[in-house]
Image 1 (tube, helix red, strand yellow):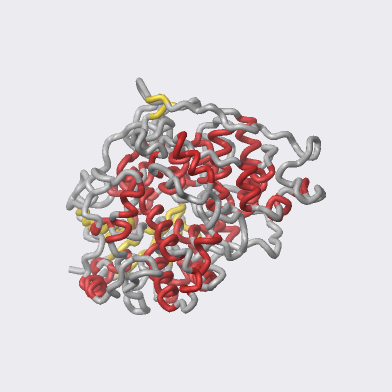
Image 2 (cartoon, rainbow, N blue to C red):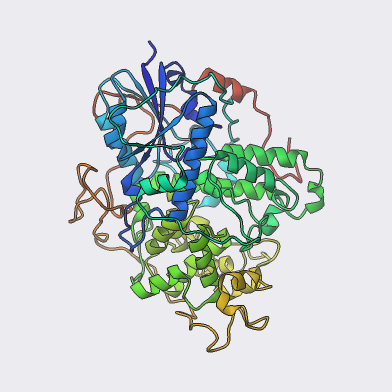
Length: 600
C-alpha cells in the first residue's frame, strides 16, 4: 500500500540530478511529497575555537543560493522545497505519521550521525526509513569491503587498487515533470523560511549577520550556489585551457582557468562526483587535441583527485571520532599549542609572510583558496607556528565554500601527520613514502620539494617563500591581495626589505617530535557532550558546536533492517531499483586508464 506522505530530508545533496532520494519506489508512489531542508542552529552557532560562527557568511550565502536553486528545480517538476528553522530531530517527526516514508542521505562523521540517530529515535512507529550513501565517486557496495572494518593504507594502495579497477556507476535516470508526487499546500504548525525570498532573508534565518559587499575585480571568480551554476562552470572549464590543461595548471594560486573550482558545488551536493567523472570522461573521449599533450594525463589526475576525496570519506568511516582527536588516529602526541595572537594574525592575513597573508585575505574575502594555497597556509600554522591543527581546520570549516567535514579534517590531520601511523616504511602517513627518488621536483606539475623532504622527515613542510617563488613568479597574486606591497620594486614583494612590511611571526619551521601517546587523550567537549566531557544521552539543549575529540561507541550497522531502537523500519538502500539496474547494464564499457594508452 502506498504511503500517504514521503519526506525527503535534504542535507549535503542539494540537487535533482543523480540523486537517489528521488528514485526510491516508496517515494515515487507516495500520495504527496515533502522536500525539506533544516536550518539547524548548531551549524550556525559560535565556534568554541574562536569568536567566529561555525558557518561563515560566504558559506551561508552559497548555501542560501543553493537552496533557492533547488527550490526552483523542484518547482519545475511540480514540487517545491520547504526550509525549516530548527533541529531536525524536533522538526522531521512532526511531518510524519505511521506508515509514511523518510528518505535521506547518510553521513559519515560523528555529529551528523548523532543527529540522524536522534531523528530516527523520534519517528512515529511504522515509519519506513530509506537511507543511502551517495557522496563518493565509487559506490561502496562495489569496493568489496566495509570501510568500518577495512581501509587500504596508505592512500596509494587504494588508488592503485580500487581506484584503477572499480568503475564508477552511471548517473541515475533524469527526473522529469510528473515523476514525483504533488506537494502539500501548507505545513501546519512549523516555522519555515520562504525559499523564494531574497538571500538576505535566508541568511537572516541562519542568524549569523549580514554579508558585506565585496568588490570583485576582473581577475576574480564570481561564485554562485546551485545546480545550474555548477553546470555552467563545468561547461566553462571544458576547454583546452581548462580541463585540457588540468594537470599542468592545478597547482597555481589563481587564474580563472587554472583549476576546476567544482569543489564548492560538490561539497554542498549541488553536483555529484559521478556527474563530474562522466562529464570529464565525455570531454576527453571526444577531445581531438589530447595527443598534443602527451606528457600529462589530465583525466587521470582529475580522477585521482576524486578518489582522494572518496578516500577521506572512507577514512572518517574507518576511524570514526578519532579523526578529530588532537593526537589523531595515529595517537601521536606532538607539542601543539594555543596562542590567541598568533592565531588571529594567521586568520587575518597579518603573519608578515606575504604569500601566507595574501592567501588568508583571499579566503576571508571570497570564501575560497586554491588547493596548493591550503597546503602552504596549513603548513605554516602547524610547522612554523606550532598551533593545534584543529584551529586551522575549524577556521576552514567556517570560511570555505567547499567545506566538507571529511576532506577538511582529514587533510589537516594528514598535514599534521597525525592521521595514521604506518611506521618507517610510510613516513608520510596517508601519503605513504612520498615521491620517488627520480622525481623532478617542482616541474611538470609535480608536488615539488615539500613532498621530497617529507619522504625523509615524515612532515611535508612547505617553505612559503619557496612556494611563492615557484607559483607566483610575477608577484601578481600577492600584490593584488596585499596592497601594502604594491609600491615595492619588482622582485621584492615576496621578500620585502626590513621596514617595508610587518615582521614575520616565524622564519623557520619548528622541531616537531612525534611521540606516541601514553595515557588518556585530552578531555572532550562538543555539542554532544556535557561540560565534564561525558557523553550526553540527548542532543537537545546543548548550545555549542564543536567536533568530537574523544573515543565514542561504534556507529550502527550501515545496512540493516530495524537497525535502531524503536519501531521504525530502516532500509539502507544504495541502488536496488529496476530502472537503476537497467542503467548499470547499459553503461558504457570503459575503464579508467590513461588516455595515451588503452581507453576502451
